[in-house]
Length: 277
Picture 1 (cartoon, rainbow, N blue to C red):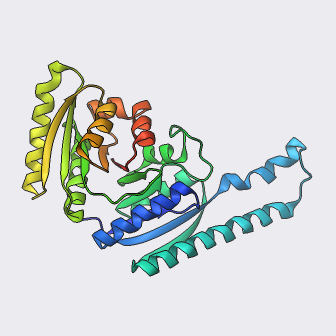
Picture 2: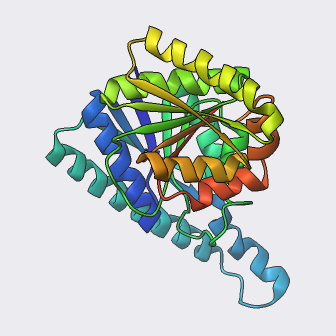
Picture 3: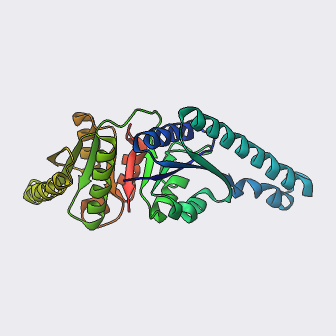
């Protein structure tokens, strides 16, 4: 059972949605929350570079002023988050960090069981690939929930399985989360070709047996096609509003979802995506 949740606060619309998911999960799981705001050190690099470009006169006070402004803004965002949590009756701690966001979250992830981050940050472009989120996921050792543009309470979970160790860990997290939230679980195994369907059915049956052994209300299904598209289609078809996946491993999840397809699922899914190392 998840008892500690850490989430990022950056003042962006996606960050606000991540906060809603984190708070909703904390209430339903009776978990401790930690809100983290990272003052992006890259924002402080410009005054250092500026003298070399000749674009603006160098003034040592510029750096200190900018750093203080960013700190003040971060403290205000955290204070607002603390007030929201207090009003909701949620136990919350907060911290202000300095550095590259992906690196900072990589360093502090050890103190939580689940990291919740918005799909896009304050300065992100429309694409997931190459973003802070993508870079953090590649170094993540804790489950990471990538949240979409809009919030909706989790009512049913879809988990992908391919028989790999990483998929097994994702299944374990999905079962624990489904039981904690008291929602049903749908297990999906994908065969890229008809000739692979028997293997997919075997993986689905084994995963279903494990879920039922943990007294999880679960059903299993199989599909034939491109894994990323099948995940999105089946989530919509079955009414699942959270997708859980192993982020590393062997088989189709590793081969097809780490890289462009992973970017596709995490950036296009209208529901949160739980990535498990």
